[in-house]
Structures are given as structure tokens and as C-alpha cells.
Length: 314
Image (tube, rainbow, N blue to C red):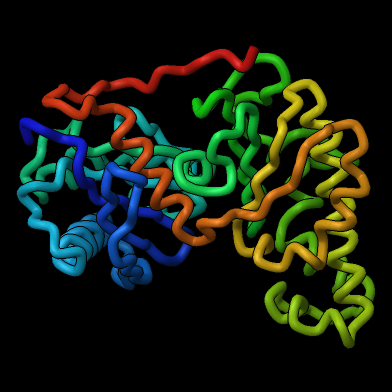
């Protein structure tokens, strides 16, 4: 193992259709050139691991960092996933990775020890990135919310993620909290926006298309307003006890905050929190993976720590 880990690491953001990778420097969590590739067409674990290895080699070369001085890797993944073991338990996404020892396989490709490869939830990576180098830097109590095909969430106190304690839902996840007779994700997601528009017009359109026609299509504007209203109402109920100072928004929908944020803020009556849109955007999870990696290594010759330290939300 590298005797002095903690200078540069490979970081990955595994999404629903693409994988992004870069070299992350410990100082300021600076990212090198970000490269991206769609998931392999073969749909096998071997092809996917080969893709991760190839992207890592390319990211290292593009950054001008020799692979032999890179301390390891951290990967942001959707769940369900065993982040300690590095094993995916997803069946609805990337089913060919189900039960595969990604930690061991990827470490072997790079010639590393397994503990040089770490994993974390994609929504947690988003918030860690914003805390380390983005919109949540220096904030004591913060919640990260990612808005896309679903709603992801993460909670942090004094820069540390929390997954339990007063006001923190189980695992820090809000997507399945009861809301409006359903689960929250049914009302706050891309399908909710599309569903409202279809109910009003009988037409099916993608969210990106709807965002581009709000000035000329009142139904599109109403779909985003309804989305924002539900977001505000849901967070007003879910976050009162935790009482964050800042709510950082990320994900594809957050790129058009003017379409829904006024409605959300209006409903956030009992939570004295400031909405902030991600400053790192697509790179937040990559920076957060770097934060995850370096937080488990001392700067001078330390050994990796196997488990993350959890802190109380009190």
C-alpha cells in the first residue's frame, strides 16, 4: 500500500446511465478533468468493472498524475448498496452488479489493497462535496436534497453526516416518508412534474422540455409550481425537529430553481432555513467522494480506517 496516502485519489460518480470519473486532490478537493462514459452495452459486471478501470486510467492520464502515486479510489453509488463491503444489492438498476464484490475486483485491477477502495451513497456524496468545497461550506446544520428521477437526501452536523438522532429519518432518507397519502417521492420527482402536466393537458413531455416552455405554456408553469409547493410542504414537515440552517438543492431539476423555488419557500413556514442551489452542480458527488476518501486517511502515513464514524444529530 502507498506509504503516504492522502494527496490524490480517483473519484467516481455512478449514475443511472453514465459514470463520471476524475482525479481529486486532497488540498481543496480540487478535481482534475472530468470524463464521462455511458454504461457498457454488454450489461455484465466484467464490462462495468473494465469501464471503471479504463476511466480511472484516462482520468489519471488527463490530470498528469501518475497512477502509482494515486492513493486509491472512492465511488458514489445509488442504493441499495453495502458500502462497507463494496457490494451492490440493486435489482432495479445495474442488475448485473448484484452481489458482485466491486471493492475486491476494482482493487485487483489497479493493484491496490481492498481498503484503498471506498464507497458511499450518491446523495451523501453530494452533500459531502458541498460541505467540503461548495454551498454548505462552514454551515453547522445542513440538509442536502437531490431532485431528479427520485429525491435523495443527506443530513450533516458540524461537517459530519448523520443517519440517526432527533429529526433525522432512518438512514437520513426522506424519499419514503409518508406524504399526502403516498410516499414523498411520488409527489417530488420528475415523474410528479410529468404527471401533473399530463393530467392538465393529456400530453406526455420530458421535464427538460417542460422547463423550456414555461413562458408559453401555463400548464408547464403550473407543473413546476405544484412540484415546488409539494417540496416546501414536505420539507416543512420533515425538517422541523432537525432545524437545518441551510438546505442545499442538487440534481437535474435544481438547474431551474426559478421555476419551483418561490413556491417551495412559501410553504417552508416552520423551518428557518435558507435554500441554496448547489455550486458544484454535476461535480458535487465527485468532490464528495474525495472528501470521503481523504477523511479516512491521515496526511502522514496512516492506515485506512474501515468504518466511518457516525455522530449524533443532537
